Length: 98
Image (tube, rainbow, N blue to C red; front, side, top):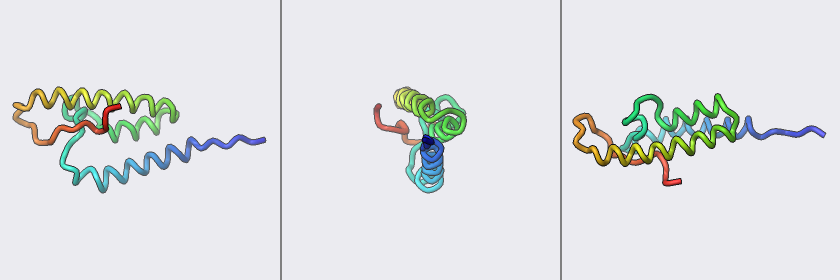
């Protein structure tokens, strides 16, 4: 009996969904990724896409949860430092509290 893995399909659907979010929703939502604003580097959506490409699905999900928690922390830090001169985005974490 052959076992069929749905992981490649799940990863492809997730990556394509994130790509659609980045193209159609993110530009018009009016706020930026707090983690990227505070630390530089990838936005959370780019980070998750990269993890889906580089890790197995379980690892990518675990790393994404950690990243969203870090983004929520970055949001709190940025909110407490509103005096920053280059602050141009509404600070909202990328996801709801986990």
